[in-house]
Length: 283
Image (cartoon, rainbow, N blue to C red):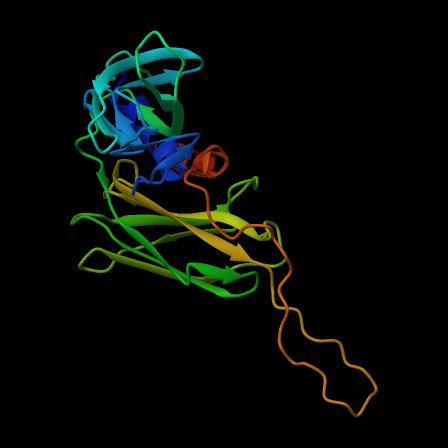
């Protein structure tokens, strides 16, 4: 078991921007889907994985791997409607990123009819003291240069909260503020999504995170995050020396996709370091 200080440091640093959608959503792949009940899992708590298999599947084999090593595995029957649910023991896992994968079979020794995977973060140690809290953003699709509101409700006793947001593939969050929750625990930050500056926002998938801390400013009481999308700034129509009316409809650049992915691992590795630094300074 990690010491309290090491466990809290690890927990705060990796959960702060765990890059893992706490409101777990299914990961799709060829012929199968998989969802975990919590994308931030603890080794002393069971992990539940569920989803659907390809037609004709009879068995779903769910594994959790870390660095290429299988740390948990469970084979379950596939129901008539092609769904499955598996409960996995994570006591063999360690703190770090993990991947939950499902393979669907007619027979266990045959070729997989379909598979899917989703990523999660596993924490070695008890996690009962750290709550998962909902985080909301408004709007869920914000243009570069626009205003973004991030809100959540921290547990009673929360003395401070760190609110961050950033692109998945950036090196730092573009919003990073520490605030004092209201008496009821509510936290709200409204900030501009920067087009310039030290960390400018870029069009694409992004994640907002709220970390609630106790009076020491050290122990995380709760953490939550949600995905949103940063859209390109509206482009003003070019002025032309003509008397004919030009279209005044703003045009948006083509980004290829406007859907935030199910995980934001890059953001986890990036912004988590900022929380670790904050904690180290207070310790």
